[in-house]
Amino acid sequence: MSGAVGREAVFPTRQSLGLMKSKLKGAETGHSLLKRKSEALTKRFREITRRIDEAKRKMGRVMQIAAFSLAEVTYAVGGDIGYQVQESAKQARFRVRTKQENVSGVFLPQFESYTAEGINDFGLTGLGKGGQQVQRCRETYARAVETLVELASLQTAFVILDEVIKVVNRRVNAIEHVIIPRTENTIKYINSELDELDREEFYRLKKVSNKKQRDTAAQDAEILGKREQEAGKAAGPGAQATTHAADILGEHQDQDVIF
Image (cartoon, rainbow, N blue to C red; front, side, top):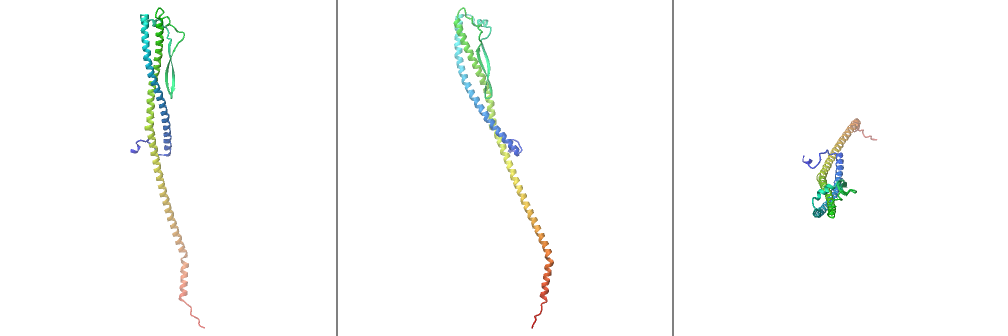
């Protein structure tokens, strides 16, 4: 059973050979497509990794500025500015919507931030004092939230692409190192078995042909011998009569006539 290692258990026929060749062609086509998909996803993955690094650096700077801005507001307004914001704000102006991006058959969610118009519940905050600092702090935190949404979108795409690339690479490796070699070994096995069957068939036909030739030669020799026997039997009495007549003429010779 050592010959069954590295190949599929199939019966060596012409039909099996055709099926294995079709399977090999499909495996090679699938390997090529998956390889291209993996390359496209890896390229996008590297781009997202670069953008995540930039977004994190930007987030650090923006949050630092926002923290200083909040400190300025607290110094200028005094009291708990967070409580005032929560009491004054009834509806959110800063909102997030989602959409999908198709990258080689993989749908990546993208988060997009926008500001709803017509909602300004935060407008009267800091009316008594520190209005400019409050406005500046609000704009700073709006940019920070936008950066945070962008970073969340990139992180989500990063996690999804990481899992998809692993799956695609496993499939590529399985096709390249398991399916294609096994199919090629199966095709070689079928070809060798078919060649062996062809040689056996040729040897059998040759033996049958030689036997027929020997049988035909024996039949021809037998027929020729029968014909010779029949010819000898048919020509036997005439030959004996001729010999007897010759003997009679030899024994009874006429005497010479003298004039």
